[in-house]
Image (cartoon, rainbow over all chains, first blue to last red; front, side):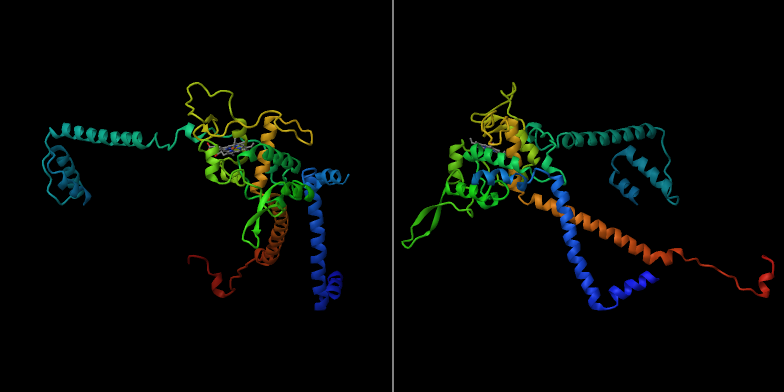
Length: 63
Length: 327
């Protein structure tokens, strides 16, 4: 009871706070999700993507 | 009713007629029964056996006519079924191997581009997948393209830009046919999608030329024998031989290595969006499963009251309820 009271008072009591929470979590959540999924994807495809082999050709051109 | 109309239709044939009439009279008890003769028994047997024979014969004839020979083409015309290879880039979570794409593009440029166009690929799409911007620009500048008409209306040549498409080897299809004994080398941009068997078929085709056609195989003049090509006679001769190209990354250029690389490259040409598609696909699956679990939970939450309720029937208490049952 105490917990739900605190939750209610801090987040849901005012509409502005709740909207802020919604947009804030959407922003942070998508950053987190995309970051994690990028990392998993790149580790599954280690060495296969262009960015993994790019350095060979970009550096070679500059030398 | 059916039996009667049949009987009317077959009035001329004695045994069948009496057989059917008997059946009719048995079916309708009101009609007058005809006295049966002993000789009809033999006739009945003959008629039934005859009908059976005709029936079996009709089925056999039909099967002979349409059953075993329903194939539209002979196996040679279908072409040999391509072996299924475990392509790494066809796996659910794997991208193209871009080093292989680079090698495959080299093979295309040095070998296939002599005959096959790749007209749907602009230089810009090679940037960031197969080569750097500078490399792509240098490559584009090696070819000349028509410019916009100048003030006199003449069209001059200009060096290629990133926005130009890879040049065709021939001026037009007629020229391509004329140079290849009448056979048109198809454009390779979408060939992986356009051939049954995709990568497996093209790999098998490129590596499937035997040293000599098998004895008895008819190979028309100007064609080459390849069991994987539908019809087995293909106008393209074997093109890949060990050591034909020299890979810049030092990979030994065996003919199967080159075939594998060029096939993967052609798969990229047909589906350049594949890497991105698979990546988004798996993100969609992840979010979709999370939402699925959430909705399952919400459903259970909403239903819990209905699922766990109990209905209790309390019979009314009154004087009559005391009377013993059945009294």
